[in-house]
Image 1 (cartoon, rainbow over the protein chains, first blue to last red):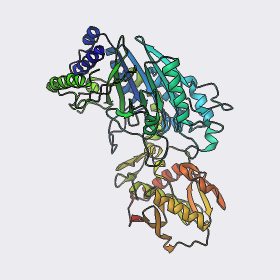
Image 2 (cartoon, helix red, strand yellow):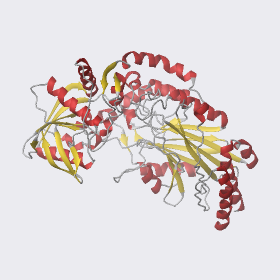
Image 3 (cartoon, rainbow over the protein chains, first blue to last red):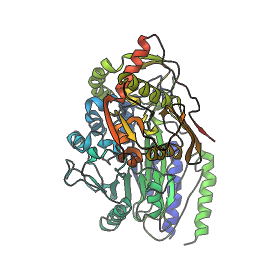
Amino acid sequence: MSSRRSFLKKAAAATAAIGFGNIPTIQAKQNLIKITILHTNDVHSRIEPFPDNDAKYPGMGGAALRSSIIKSIRQQEEHVLLFDSGDIFQGTPYFNFYLGEPELKLMSKMGYDAATIGNHDFDNGVEGLARQLPNAAFPFICANYDFRGTAMEGKTIPYKVFEKGGIRIGVFGLGIELKGLVPEKLYNKTVYLNPSKVSAQMAYHLRHKEKCNLVVCLSHLGFKYKEDKISDVVLAKQSLNIDLILGGHTHTFIDIPYTYYNRDNKPLLIAQAGWAGLRLGRIDFYFERKSKLFAYNGDTVKIMRKPS
Amino acid sequence: MDYKEIFFNLAVVIHFSRIFFLLASVILTASCSKQSVIVNTTKVQYRPNVHDTIKPDEEIRSFIEPYKQKLDSSMNEIICESETTMQKGQPESLLGNFVSDLCLEYCQKVFPDSIIDFCFFNNGGLRNPIPAGAVTVRNIYELMPFDNELVILVLDGATTLKLINSFAAVGGVPVSGIRFLIDKTTASAIEINGKNFEPNRNYHILTSDYLANGGDKYDFLKSRIGYHQTGILVRNAIVDYCRHQSAAGHKIHSITDNRIRHE
């Protein structure tokens, strides 16, 4: 018990120290392992920054600046994971003319570790998505689309376990219901499976069978809705064994991850990084080496040029 | 475990941390399982973004360059000037009215013999604003990236009313040729082409194939009497309209005229 108390003090001290940029020394001294999770969602083919005359986001975003920021974080941090929560495709002429190739090649160059599938990733049909997959050097993780009998059959995985500094991070993916959202001729024979059921199985498996210290859900369900519909918030409240939901679809800007409480009244986080590559979400988890208890600190990075 | 003690310790940490402008809130839960402790340290101070000193990645830029150059040659063409920034919104908006007005006008011109009573789209389908000033082909691609085709639906009176009520239920959608009042979640005072809605006749309705085939929860549109393809992409109609306005010496403009209003 006393170890937990001292861990809390250490964790608080560690996060307090962020402002001064001397985390590595404190980590070494205090035996903490830091896992840095970076994430995007709904980038929607925004390869270039928004134009300077854009009404809302003049000069903001862009793959080149995002890449530099990711690189600089990788230089500072030992254990970095980078995820995307879907809707990589559609929104600029890049997708109309190049069909998703540069999007996936850029994400591969940036070292994305995994992505899940959004509804707009079906915009050139399930075949159009399958055709682009060779351009991705990272897996597409999705547990609730049954692609049997389609061009995507066997090309996704339901979950993946990453191991960083002795910490096991289990990641599974959830897609949104396609009927009524995506034309049937595009998703074709893809079968949407109930995300509540699938995620319960996935999270249990990752926590108890795969012995993961951190369970992450890449979700394209959407943050929350007025109507009674599955969303990240609904999922969080009914869940067990999930620590972090990295969301998408609703283009929600969450600067600091929200804490929700699951079915056992245990806390979990929901994060989402707006859209269009305007933000890079960041959550640092600090694990104590022995107990594997964790603390976290979350913040998003704005992808914008220095004001001149 | 002594919870009071933990809170006391955290309180001490918080106290000292305030010197560093950190830890605006602390959420603590403690129980016996492995992953049960989350300490949320939320900062209130402005943390300088790392990118303040970071330049765009040259390697990435040079990778993008050939794709960009090829696109720029066709996408940067200026097709017209816009009087103002047009954004989407509810119950009606400059952008929604602009797109639906022009599509209705465009199809009435291309198919002068056809009857079109009104036109509707969905807000989700308008993906980006139109800027004030020069408008490029790229702007229209970003407004309407989808290859959606304009189609004319024929619906009976009951299904038409269901459709119009659905516009009200979501708080208003882009429309043209129709006016109504949102009365909580249903439409009232419905006028189509200046005439009161008639429940016992059929209506010809212009929309996109995406919506006509059940997209955005319009599943009930599958119970239609007729479906006519126009062969015109929504995006091409917009680009064409813009070019024509410009050739005629006009800037594009839009109005809101209370076509959809709350009671």
